[in-house]
Image 1 (cartoon, rainbow, N blue to C red):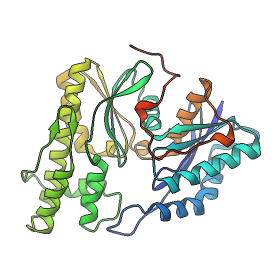
Image 2: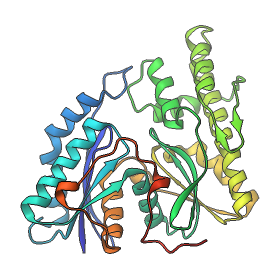
Image 3: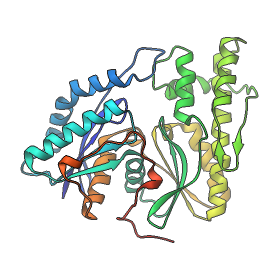
Image 4: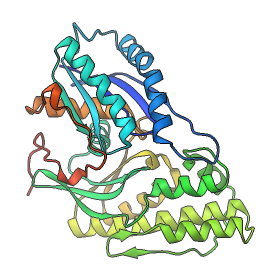
Length: 332
């Protein structure tokens, strides 16, 4: 069984071909906004429209398959995400499914992150930490759904890093640049630390960090170091509490920020204290990619989920804890 997955939620347009055993291809083209700017949905969607045919052709070429003869099902990211970007991916998926008479499966992008992470790390029943530009959640699987044990109350960890980086004139995404600058310092400057129950709040931290650099003229490397240490410690505290409460023995980290080495070090420490194993999605597949959509679409289709092409929807706001995961056995 072979699935074509199409990802287009935000800055990345990607196509991937997967089967039950391996990722046969994963091709991406990323919209790059001007330095100091964030993603403009309309401009990003124009980028996706311009590159979609080239990305699709390359994915098929790399996998050495054809849609007509080899692909069994087409999956696409239906949400959550930026409306104009989601619609480009959905249109491509609908056109292909209609022309080649293939079944079509809408996929929740956040669940795609989780399913690919589980597949690539062989985690069994983990606490999941999903950290990206669009998500910041601590999750556990219970009774056919991913349940939220903690999340951000305002902006996500990825948004914190990107908005701070853009204030310094960096181009999005800014996480790797901030990580590189932070590695040059060990001088911690106290910043707001806000954990409420098992939820975190990053907006006050962002305001304080921007003020340190732009108004107080603090050294950029020191502020990047302090920002990372504070933000990651907040998330590590909440994650450790979730591990202790559920008594699970695995932690899986997925999403674009999963590539950060300092975050991994902190999470390794809490796992050691809680007697849990740490699983981090490989860096190549941490960010948005078609493989997440293809793998999840294949699982969903094999479980009996597909829609009529005329009903292939997009949904800008689509919480992952509202989606029934019928391909996993309920554990509660």
